Structures are given as structure tokens and as C-alpha cells.
Amino acid sequence: MSQTDSEFQSLREKFYNATVIERIDCHENLARFRIRPDNGVPAFIAGQYVTLGLGYWEPRLSGTQVENVPEKKRHKLIRRAYSISCPLLDDDGQVASIDSLDYLEFYITLVRASSSPDQPPPALTPRLFELQAGDRVEVGKKIVGKYVVGEVDPDATILMLGTGTGEAPHNAMTASLLAAGHRGRIVNACCVRYLGDLGYYPRHLLLMNHFSNYRYLPCTTREPINIDPSMPGYVGKQYLQDLFTSGKLAEAADDPLSPENTHVYLCGNPDMIGYVPPGGDPPATPGLLPLLESAGFLPADHDHESGPGRIRFEKYW
Image (cartoon, rainbow, N blue to C red; front, side, top):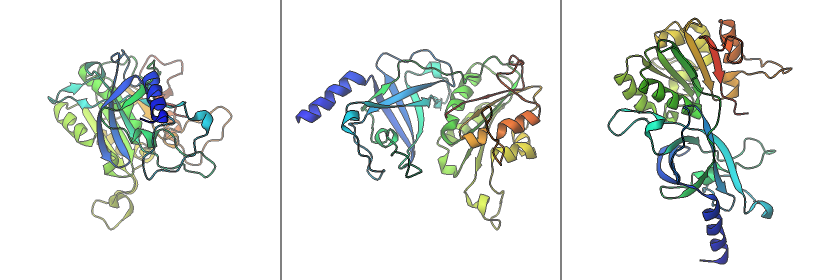
């Protein structure tokens, strides 16, 4: 082992406190990582997040954007926050809630290059996607976050709307609700480009077979049925905003999705959520927040926080 390799190994021993026990590739740019902390999984609430960290000294996946690491960063960690997901079902086909697991599951998209020449190359995911079972990583000391289900009536409707890997906390929420015996409708809708971007799809189908009150609604935007009017079953691009305002979402959910009995959770693309900071200009195409408010729902920080009709959303920006 060279002096440099020895130095990096010492840094791994100093910083890393968890082991990748399994990696499940959905496709080349999407994977589920199961990571076991050395000191066990601390108690946390479904929907919360924690940081993952790797050293700048770790190798990057071949085919990702070249990165020139300054010497002053060479011995430091890159840390990013990720919502904790859930496998939904255990090996016996039973609901796997977060408190039944001895590992943390993460649902991560590989970012191969920055979206703009003005932005630095992505630092963490090109290194994460080099990891295999047995490799080491840092997990943050605290699992935190306010994006949780909160207090809901067991007969209330739960509507979770996400895009891409924004589905992760909703999976954890879904499993926890079902394990607790929630009786009301649970609707988990996720919008992606292609069906292949739904890494948990088969598990959701199994879950629907087990629970008649659960609905998983996959929505796509780039499949042939979304872009080619000549295709049998053509539906156009299925954006969650359009599905909600048109009533198609309520129809597919087999539930009126009324603010009188429905709690709403939003996670994923900021354009889908549609949060406008105070003093900000609203976008030309509104996100779900103003559309939901127009339908009678209220932000969760409103005075009526204790009842149905609330909107909670995760902020990734």
C-alpha cells in the first residue's frame, strides 16, 4: 500500500461509520442503497432525512464529468441530505416499516454531470455509484426533518404526490401507515419520465394486492403513450398538476380527495410543488401548492394545522 493509499485508509477509518450491505440497481442511473450504521439504526420518523458522506479522495464512476479537486478539499468529505426510503415489503412479503429494519434504505439518482457550465461537477453521486456491498460510507449523526405524516385520523385519506426519487419518504410513510393499521385511503402518486424510473413499482403492485385501501399511481411523461398520439392508449404527458385539476387523479384514486378528509404531502421537483417564497414571482405554470389552495386545502403552517385539508411539503432547495 502506498503512502497515499495508507493516508486515505486512515481517513476512512476516521470518518466512515456505516457499511453498504446491499445495492439494488434499477437502471444505470438509479439505485437503492441499503446501509447499516455501525451503532445500529436510531429511532426516527418516516419521512425524515439524514446525510450521507464520502471523501473527495474516493474514485468517481467512469463516464461521469471530470472533476479537478483542489488540494485543500482532498482530505474533506462531501455530504448531502437524503430522505430515508423503505423496501415496503420484507422477504416474507409482509409490510416492512422503518422500525422493523436494521438498515437505512436510500433511493438515489446518479447525476453524471452538472446542468450548466457555470456549476461545479456533481461531487457525491459519481462516488456513491462506485460503492458495492461491503464498502464504507459516513451516515450523519442525526436523522432529522419535519416532513412527516403527523397526527391523522385512521379513516382520513392520505394523498402523497412525488416526482422521481421524491417518492422515497412517501414509501416510508406508506409502510408505517399500513403497519399501524390505517383504514382510510392511502394514495401514492409518482411522476417520472419513463416507467423504468419507478424503482419500487413491482413492490407497490404487491402492496396493493395486500391492502385494498392502498393505491399506487405511476405517471409518466416520455413514454410513447405520452408523446405519440397514434399510439394505442395515448394519454399525453401526465403531470400531477393536470391530473389533479382535471379530476383524473381523484378518479384513479377512487376517492374524492376532498379537503374535508384528505391530508396532502408533496416531495420532489420544486416546479411540481410550486412554492413561491415571500416576495417571489409566481411561475407561469403553477405548481400544486396554489392549485391545492384553490381547491380548499391549507398550508401546514396555517392555524388549522391540526385537522384534515393540510398540505405538507419537503424543501430540497
